[in-house]
Length: 332
Image (cartoon, rainbow, N blue to C red; front, side, top):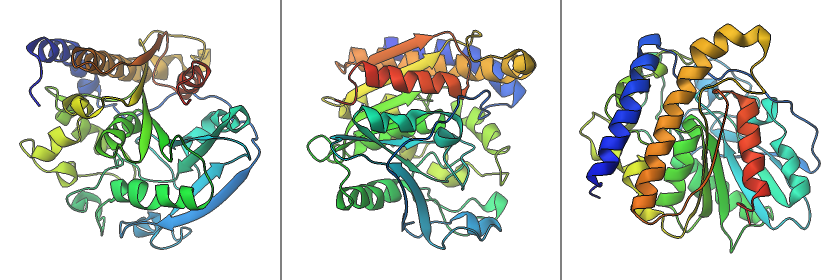
C-alpha cells in the first residue's frame, strides 16, 4: 500500500517530536494510575492451547498449566455481543490489567460479554519470528495463532455470541495497535476493533528504537525486538503496522481513543511526579500515533469513531474510553 504524502509528513512530524522525549527517558511501556474493578456476574475461567508458545512457566513460574493460556471471561444469557480485551506491555499471568484496574467487566450487564486472555508481556499479540534470546525464552510467541485459531473457536463452542458470528476486539497501549491489526488481518473473525492509547503507526521514524528501549525494561527483561518481526526492512513490520494496512479495514468498525497528555480526573496528588515524567510523554506519543492513524484512515475512506480528552497513560482513562465506546453503540 502506498501512503499519501500528506499522511507520511503528518505522522513524521507528530511522532518525531514526542518520540524524542519518550526515547530519551526510556520510559515507554509504563502505565500509571488505575481505575477500580467491581464484581461482575457470569464469571468463568478456562484454558486454551498456546499454539506451542511459552507460558510463564518458561520463566520459572510453575503455576500456569504447561502449554496453555488462561482466559478469564464474563458471560450473561441473552447477550448478543462479545469483546476480547487485550492488555498492555506489562501484562501479568494471574489476571488481566483490565480486571485488576477497571470495571469493564460490568459491560456484561449492558449486553456485551467480556473476554480477557491472560499473559503475553511485550508480545504485541503477534506471532514472533523467533524466541527472545536475550531473556532465555525457549519458544517464540504465537499470540496471533492463540487469538485467532484457539480463542475464537473456544468462545464459539462456549456460547459467546457475536455479530454474525464475529467478535469485537479492543486493546490498550501495546494491545491497541494489535487489536486493529488482528481485525484487519482476520475480517472473518472480527467485526470491530478499538485502540485505546495505542501505537498505531509502528513504522514511523524512530518508533522501532523506542520499542527496542521499552522491551529492555519489561519483565522478564530484556526482550529482543529483532526476534519479533525481524530487521527494520522485513516486510513483517509493514504487515503488522495498522497505519500500513488501513486498506484492509473497509467495513470494519474502528474506535480510536487517546488522552492529550494533560492531567485529568485520574491524576492523583500522590502520583504527580510519576504521571508527569512517565504518563504524560507516553500519552503524547499515543496521541500523535492515534492522530496519524486517524488521518490515514480518513484519507482512505475508513470511518473512525474517536474519543479524545484530558488524560495521561493510565487505566482510569482507558476505562472511560471503553465505556464511551459502548455508550455510543460501538459494539452493536
